[in-house]
Image (cartoon, rainbow, N blue to C red; front, side):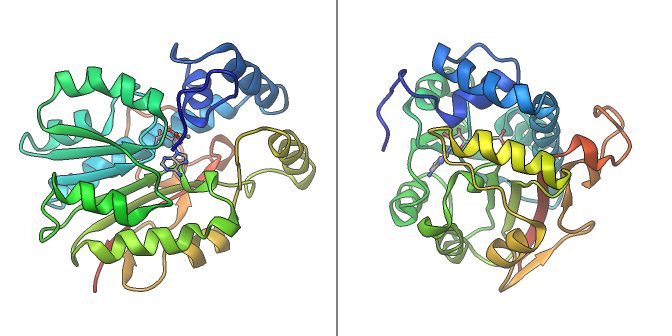
Amino acid sequence: MPELDTSVPHEARVYDYLLGGKSNYGVDREAGDAILQVTPQMPVWAKQNRQFLKRAVRFVAGEGIDQFLDIGTGLPTVENTHEVALAANPAARVVYTDYDPMVLAHARVLLDAADSTAYLQHDLRQPDELIADARELLDFDRPIAVMLVAVLHHLRDEESPEVHVRRILDAVPAGSYLVLSHATYDFLTPSYAAELHEVLSHSPMTFRARSRDEVQDAFLTGGLDVVPPGLVATTEWRMDNGDIGTTPDTSQAGHWAAVARKTG
Ligand SMILES: C[S@@+](CC[C@H](N)C(=O)[O-])C[C@H]1O[C@@H](n2cnc3c(N)ncnc32)[C@H](O)[C@@H]1O
């Protein structure tokens, strides 16, 4: 579990910087600026990802889900999972988990605001511990929305992200949902992708963009029914009228997105 370290950039704080937040340090802004130099539209990708999160939470709440396990929560920003879930269903319960201690510190503010919300500091690479603690707060005999939004690209292939995801999905009953988004270079030209890859590969943060096939094969197989419109760009997933860029424009997307129902 990482300690609060302000001498190296952390994913949550760089992401916060890209979203225009204030919960970040000089090192995070430096890492963010290096990315922005090559990819000035990264903040748009991040916003589109947040908008997907909002629409997906609203969708699964509409399907009757009232328990949410949001893994790799990130720093609080606008329209956090619990706000969207509670607006859809005031009886909803949300458990946030992230491995970054700064997220925990900020989450205390969130927790004050909502009794129905809890926060656990966990690394998803230790899924059994995460599940054991989440069991204290959520009823694992009833369907749960497992949210892995913009987090799995922070795991290298050698860390077997698909095994951890499977472990977590095995713990929830049929009728549960997986809400997933994952960074990709698929929407970029090859030369642009190579340039961005070069910057990110020199960053102390792990960033493993995956192709659509890689996301599909690693995370969306075995007893999962992907709901329409399928595994698509964030900008193609059930856009709302109020969203930025209301047309499904993949040039505004940096992530693949899907919602899947566990069938067995
Ligand atoms: C890009 S942010 C995404 C935040 C939010 N889910 C969203 O989509 O807006 C990625 C988050 O994943 C967290 N994270 C990265 N690796 C993790 C791991 N192994 N276990 C738990 N959280 C992790 C980071 O601390 C960061 O808060």
